[in-house]
Length: 415
Image (cartoon, rainbow, N blue to C red; front, side, top):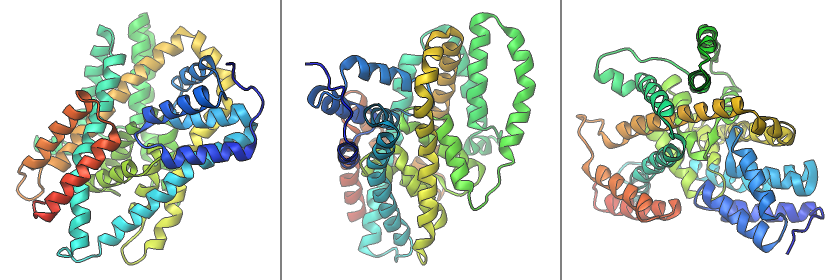
């Protein structure tokens, strides 16, 4: 049966994407599967070819895939207002739920450590942390299997990985060496240009690009904390984030842990856990992070505006990109040069993901007192990776299992 090419009412678009925003657990792949089943197979808003064309288009540009798909379908079926309503419906529930969970998290910081509620919350977070590590590693593993398909890609990945390791503070501190400060945007530009040059023998490109790296890095390093800095940094993240929303972890680790110290590694893991516990796009984690960075247990309301600004900042580039997508995607798809550049960018993305895993695993699996390994968390991380990659467990199933284990750890005082 052919799809219904008639415009869909704005209220129907809003209701549909509100339902997706409230019910779509499981990460970007699960979101896309839900849209395909509901909007292609059941409601016939699109046919399979239209859906796959949109999916191919959003994979060629920065931004979270499932969120951009929601925006694109809203624009396709209801024009600009359709896109606005799809954006509100798909993102607002997860933003509100993330802020609510972050309020509980921050408020718990002011509770006595011997209280049952504090111990339960800490147990949940400790149980979920290995799952978050596995989701980050799994994203890198699956992207790598698809993207690293030739010797040039592997060589470039090795170089990018070396650079990333030089930027990880715990590793450099272990060897008593200074930490390299390099923005993720510069790394992505560098890997993209280098892949084009290596594949096409255009060594002259490297000669003129390398001097620009210092300028780009200097400009990015001049960003200083201001009232709107959270908004600005999340706009930059949203504009340069390729692929799955789980890549957000790598970007946030660099912006808010390494560069500014506004979040600790533990707080970042906790905010990522909040993002997994709520439905909707993973990027709603930005709202929880914005709240945690600005609120205090004695004044929770100070975090509300920064939380919303953080969420708007990270989703805004995707909204704009979808508006202009139709005009530029045909050019990009026809350009072999652009395709090679994007392949190189993917190498940088994978290296950043592996780097984020290493940095956060160090903060999660190594106890701050004495530097000993948390054996239980190490075993749970291994089991979670096995369940994810060998048994096909969904992210939601892994998170719920982590919560149960965490509550047991808290109940038996195995924190």
